Structures are given as structure tokens and as C-alpha cells.
Image 1: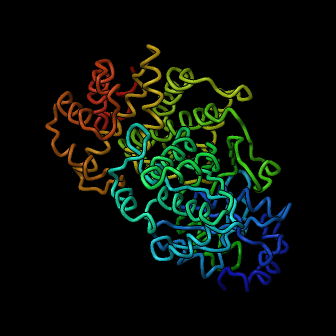
Image 2 (image 1 turned 180 degrees about the horizontal axis):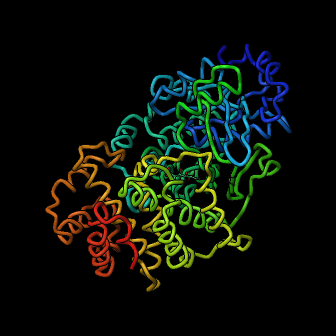
Length: 491
Ligand code: CS2
């Protein structure tokens, strides 16, 4: 039996005795769509949808979600036959399963654009949220909209049939302005510092290319809060699909797994109607930058460090990597000497306890979080997770050595991927592999090739002799890691 609306009653009966299983407690048929979400991947379905499901279960409201994939048809192909239903498996000290019903509609922008725009332009929709990954914003190394990006170029010449998220948001807002419909709020839920502000600037830059009136209306009418989002949500694998189907007694073809920890902090600038997220644990704050810095620099900075260094010595998962004593010790030094001192945490956060909790989360034995997944899209992640911290330390005259080791490990990761004819998952994969193809084994030559390209580093870092020399030193230090393991780190 497939998980679907028509089978929900019999599934509910079959699992009625299972304490660790819950299903929607609200009437889905009477729940209209009030949210459009761009990028319905695993993280969205584990995080924002879980919060909204709690609101629907406890307080009701027309907060159904229309999930829009920008291009891929995977989500629609799997979720449509399940009427948007899926199971969230919370794998931690306790194992719990929750069938989630908040997703009411799944569309694909490339072949259902009229329906997507109609939905986004409808007065019922109050919120457009996004998890499109760092690369989805089409930003340059300075965090500005890249007007030369192929999708932005397309959209600037085809305003009415946009392919980018930025173009789609502007076109939907244009329709609302023309029809005298109040604007929606735009909530970025991606791992980007000042994600809301960056998205607002990108949207206004794009809108100005079309109409100053439209750009002014957006500026005055639309809220783009920045947010910090957090829950470790590994890609779904066959084991999870099997485990969930056995627990549910029904076939769910795309369950989602995550840890128990869940956190969402939203800048307190939303306007108009919205789900009562604060009643289910979401924090509204006007100190969002501090929360973002704490999470992106500590959790995501350690994640990328564990990924590239762990993969260099043949490790597979975050748990394997944090269990490696040399890596564990290195992460503790990186935290205490270079990450935590680099920013001012929120007043309400004990940052050392926060960091210790993150290490404990990495040790979760129920979760297999692949280092190879975290290693994706390094050209988008390294700047926001490592280089921002490194630049702040450079300006402050503080240590940058340990952060630079992560950058060096990433460059070795790219080099070895190319050498082994592996696949590099990164929007700049071709350019990065081309760079390492031109390496000649001399550390100064190879690092200079990488740094002098316009792909990753800001002019400030490229012109810093200290950073460039440190990167050569770190790159040389890790060159032997394949033979000598991470003992090379200890000095
Ligand atoms: C991870 C993040 O895949 C990655 O890059 O670092 O997805 C991480 O699991 C989340 O940010 C945790 O909140």
C-alpha cells in the first residue's frame, strides 16, 4: 500500500498503538495554501515544513505549502502520487516517525510556469520561502547578483518566463503590483550570511533592470528577513526508506531523516499574516547576524573541515571523522583558537556550550551523514563558512593557520578528485578541475594558480601576502597526508 490521502485512514488505524508514530491531526482538505516554497529538498521538508506542520496540528490555519522545484521533476514525481504526504524519521536518542501533510501541491517551474506564477500571485499566498542552496542565488564573490550568470542573462531577456529564483520572485511580485495584491514576505532559508539582505539586494538589482517603479514598490512593500536554520538532515538512503516503510506499514518512496535538534531564528521583520511559528519554537530576533555567525562559522565551518580532511584520509561519515582523535583535537583547536574568538555571539548563547553540543550532535550514532555530501559545492560553501572568518581574523591580526588548513584540504580534495577522474559536484566544477589539471606539483606554483583565478577569493585575500604564504605552507603540510595520515596536523 502506498502512503497517500486515500490510504491515510487505514495507515492511522494500523499504527494506532505505536507511540513513536504520529500523523496529521488537522483536516488537510480544508487547509488552503498560504506558502510557496522554492526548492523542496530534504532540508526544507525536515525543517521548515516540520515547524509549519506543528502549527497546523496545534492551531490550524491556511498554511498549506505549494512546493516548487526550479527544474528537477524528482520531488513532483514522487510526492504527487503520495498527495504531498511523506514521513519524517527523527533518528536520535529516541526514534520517532511523523507523517507530514503540509505540502498540498508540488509543481516544477520549467514546465508548469503559469501555475507557479498564478499560485505566487494569489492573495492567499503570504509567504515565499526558499532552500535553493548557496548557488541558487546567482551571486558573485562579493555577494552581489551576478548579472552575467547564464540564468540571470536568460531572465533579463525573458522577464515573463524566468528560470532563476530571483527572476521568478520579481515576476510574481510584478503581477501582484499590477493586480493591486499586497506583496508576500520572502524568507531565505539557506546557509548564507545575511541571506535575506543578500536576496533583497539581488531582487532589487534584477527588478531595476526592468522597471524602477517595480523596484521601488518591492523596496517599500516586501520583507526579506534573514534567517538561521539548523538541523542535520542527511540525504535519504535505501536504509531509511526500508526502515520507514516497515514502521509505517506502507510504502513511502521519499521519507526524510534528521536528528532531533531543530532550530530556526528569523529576523523579526515579517509583515502581515503568517503561521504562529513562535508558538512551536521558532525564535524571532533582531540580532540575526550573531545567530548566523555562530551557526555558519561553528557547525558549518567544522562540517567542511571534517569533510575535506576526513575524505583525504579515507573516512566516510561525520561520525567517523569526529571520532578520529587527530581530527577531533584539530577541531577543538580550530574552534577555540580561530572560530569562537572571531565573532560576538548572541547574548543569550553560551557559545562554548553551543559548540560542545554541536560536537555531540556530530557523534549521533543513528545518523550516517556522508562527508562526500558535505563536500559538494565547496566553491559556494568555503567562502561563507571559512573565508569570512579567516578575513575577519586577518584584519584583527589573529591566527588564520587552522582555517587556512581547511582551504588547503579543499584544494587537495579537488586535485585528487581530478587525478582519480572522480565527479566534482560543484557549480564551478569544470573551472576548478581545469585549475588543478594545470598543477605541476610545486606548492607555490599550484596554490598561486588557484588563488590568482577570479573564482573564489576576494581581492583582499588575493593581495594578502600572509594569507597566500600560509596557504602554500598548509598545502605543503597536507601534501603528505595521504601517506602519513593526519599526524601532519599535529604541530
Ligand atoms: C552541511 C549542512 O551539507 C552541508 O554542507 O554542512 O547541510 C548542515 O548539515 C546543516 O547546515 C545543518 O544545519
